[in-house]
Image (cartoon, rainbow, N blue to C red; front, side, top):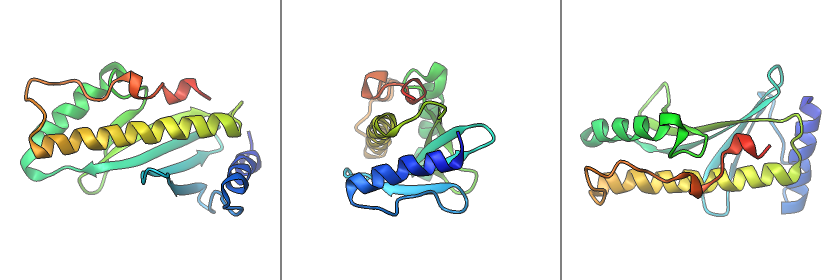
Length: 158
């Protein structure tokens, strides 16, 4: 799929939501904020024909660093609690990121909207989960985060 086709999908979505100039920038990046207030970023990699979707989930507080890291590692095990996405730390800073990649060879507007909606819901669920750790409302022996039912595997939707 060429960049032009990806651009046309974003343009079609933009036209439908009242943002006619919705498009990847010169670096093949696009950032949006969903109706729920979740920031979702898209980066298109033409050589791999992949659209990477990522969102900042929260910041790792010093006093909960070990618990956060444990939570992220458990969640990523066979993607059981991430619906096929991956939780990670940004290379700079202490930001927890949720990442997914979608092959775009047969991507269309409806599929991209569905993937984005599910990804935003998963981002929101993980943000809440990590905030619960900070608030002390998650039991120490409770190791399951948001489950697959929170959102289907994004890679299986495209």
